[in-house]
Length: 153
Image 1 (cartoon, one colour):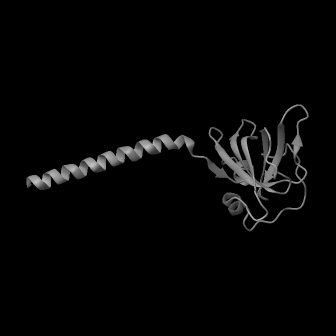
Image 2 (cartoon, one colour):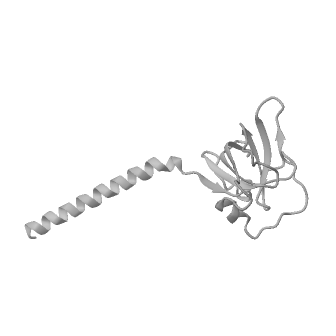
Image 3 (tube, rainbow, N blue to C red):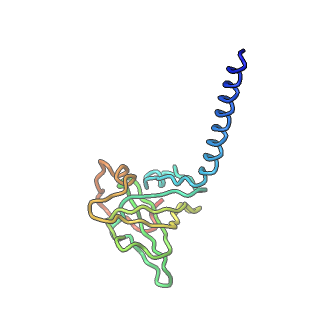
């Protein structure tokens, strides 16, 4: 093999090796920060992991918001009209958070299957719905009947 070709081949191999190593290290560093979205039906069916941070989104069930009288804990139900998830959040909720409105909650599932939210996001105007929630609700209609806090999961 000609010395110039050999030198070019070695340079190309080094570039590929260093690029692969860099991509691998970046992927490894980011894998813990991936926050996957699950619709309430998947969470209720047990398809969501309990050992990592996830997001759950849908519509807040009418009449499901229960606020604690002693602290800032709020428990409510989120539905995608196929499943219901009970969400517990301690903190100040967004001003636009309300029953019958779209919401996305970030957090994790506890051992009872209740979603322990660390952040709750509400829609910001009447025309906006988070893309994940819109996709989960697409083509579904609200079911008649009521849900009670504690029946989710």
